[in-house]
Image (cartoon, rainbow, N blue to C red; front, side, top):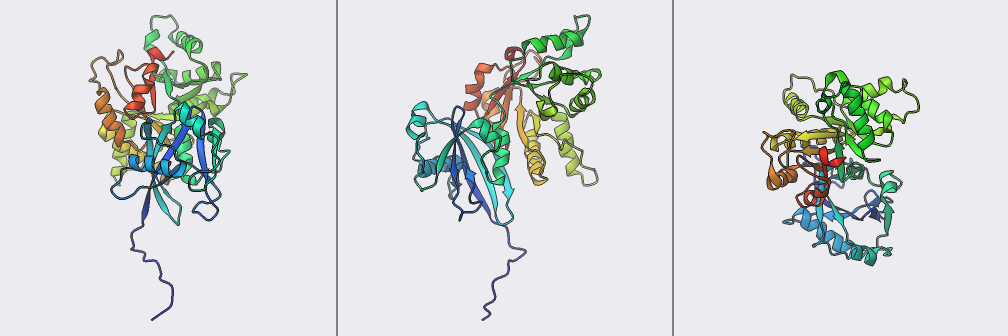
Length: 365
């Protein structure tokens, strides 16, 4: 019998390890473990988590893993799905199901000084800004999770330009209103549908260098074009994401199904936030998120899922309601943002039904 080592069979199916990940935090403090040098992706920090057992749901697994690794019982805590992602390390493929778990003040006080977990691993609490700035070396698959965590609990959306048609100079009135009324350092989706006003997003960012903006790629180009023409301006880093409408998302999805059609060019410079309204668009969003990861482009960091409730802007559109909205959110592989008839105070309700954030116009200024 030959003693030669077994060669890998090229037809052998790749084994994917299913992992539940717990992003544990109390306010702005996040818990990280440290992987031993002998482990896969060793000498790196990591979120708590582990393999999902047979006949165990991802949420059951994350509760069990947290208890086994840290001794923290989280079955009564708010557990919110962030998303799912697949990563190929070359020597190993993992499918991560990621949950965000907020500890109570009592739980945090009990565990904030624990330097080691129950399995002997080093534990440390880190500030969220330092975590998002990648000051802690995490496995490659975790970089997308950091982008997800950057999405705030509340996002403002600008009024349509038509709201200011009664003014002699609608664009000037639009700019003045938003410059004055936007909360400081907020994320704002600058939605100006008037094709003749593409530079309005750029002008607003110039007037309010503290805000972080979600814009269309066209608005982003306008920003670059006039950046040098207005003095005393903040940098292009104000743009945190590009927005893809429901129509553009479905067009992209339809095109990739047609092998004769060329793939539409999407932003390669910024993360994406999408608009979804139903199961079909959630499916398309999941596909796009997967493609972005495979192509190592900035990830999809969220999707506006709307309308949750009835809105003044679209009074004839049938709202999803919280129950249907929640069912759709569970289908998503990316974080879900509630939109439509919501107020900032509804964030707890959105978390309860599977979202991570709420967005809106009238009540967010």
